[in-house]
Image 1 (tube, rainbow, N blue to C red):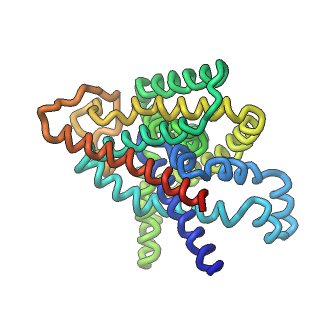
Image 2: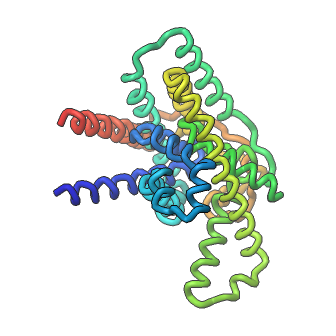
Image 3: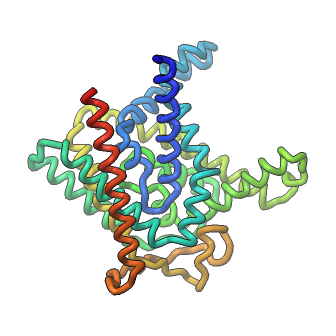
Length: 337
């Protein structure tokens, strides 16, 4: 019975990683929000914080078991394994849904974020002046980011490394979407679509015995880019987590108030009734990387309540809210037993 419970806990943790990874790829949605709502955010931060000089010494000295235990290896492998797996599975499904049912997908996420704000807010407690100010700052930053204008694509490797550091913020800072930050930096398509698809092409080619994929210059370009981006992301995860671990210990409630503000402010990014404004009249690049590669901005508008699509969108928002409230109910029942 105990073994069965442990196995189910591992599966549940892997599924949490899947959800976080899928959220990280969708512009406007933060994987950190998923980890916060699913109650493994602080463990994630403190586990990354364990990747330090002591861990490096354990690794160099061949004390692999001690290293694995010290960095909370089982937790990190399951969560990060789920997150990486989702890039080649769930996130591809999300790409398809965003292409064909964009309004409903955004509505679902919009509802989930509303539910998340309520989920975190109801148990917060002490709304003193300092915490309220942090909450307002968080909202202001979140809303401000949603109205920024994206830059041009840049494949300089130093900039790609920087994108890795900044892009991973969505995993470590709830409410701050790493994917949307990459759109603002101009490199969303290059790093999360073209390079991922290029890596997938290389892997499937090699597994099928087709080594000619390594002779294609564009494939090798994408391989180099995704390697540098991954290195930047790893560096960002560890460095940002050390900073967050420190501030969470010293100013726990203030940081949580800021996080709630970030999440509430991100509602402006995932507002369902919007259309992307492109420099040319092509929008399919968000799915396959072709055509125009630059989003100039988002044009938001109020829903038309005489349209049946609007009511379907509201229905999906309610489903998103209900999903988070269902998680909250499950957690309370679990704690009660």
